[in-house]
Image (cartoon, rainbow, N blue to C red):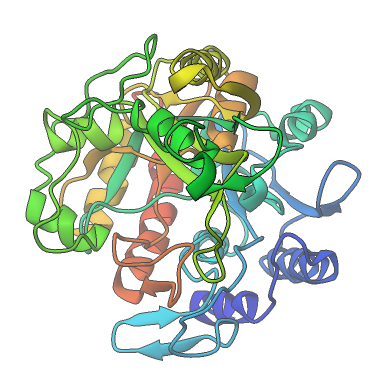
Length: 429
């Protein structure tokens, strides 16, 4: 098999995290594919969390060991697709299908790199393909603890990010963290007629709206006290490009102040993700006694997720208007990540494969497993790469796709990286 046929076979399995049977089929196929490369040790592990695949290739004497990470679970398909989401189809220079970019392309790239050496790479290689990244890798820390000796490596390649642009390789050197809360506002024992009581009795939905409006100042910067900000990699991110990629409507201004790259990579953001309220259709003239919202923070690298969640909860409790009753449930957290300078060996490998120099970027989203690996293996060099995804890949959305030219370059780059790490300059990482 070649890398593209590997990827197409993987996409055909709808390994959405909630479908345990499909996730197992996906893990079984992944295990078979790594066995086909000649891996001397391939295990399907399901004692901790969803089925994961661990493949190992022993290190030649004196050579380092590289851990290659990917995940085989995917987001639900959702609606709005131009073609069936689990039937891969090529249109132009892109392959469409759920998981094409996030993250089954990484599995196929790892396979391609290993096949480039006929299953006998010049360094030790351990491949971990987990099955629950799309639900936040809830058991990964326990998995790493259980299999620590088998996962230990000198270099860890986490191939679950995006390039900065088509044809431009990128290493992600920082990621924002995550902290979420659900806030509930109560004002009355029961609903009441808006004509009889409106004007004196506060309704919960209006009170909630006023509370949520306090999350930002007039410029759109986050107004939650106690959060930190930082500096982003020096990358020119034009506003017009960002507007197109974000799908902003004409005339809608951007939020916040300062360089755009800092706003999305190195400073906190606050978003209202959901509100429990009566639907407009069928609504009556009734003052609502209770309303809820889910609020999410993205945290700057260097912040602490638990402390930031407490700051958000404190803000919500203390900024409610009119003395209304507020209850806050503190939700999920994910720690931010800030890495060291990228490996020289990786720069050489990716620059050669892509024909252009690597760009260092930040990540506005949160990838919880990165912090888990960094904590478990503090002496390992960590590299966060893309297996061909780019800003137009629509990861998590309809018509998810992969640029095939960049996928081919990513496969070559990973093989070149393994060769670089085995050479005389390997220790000058």
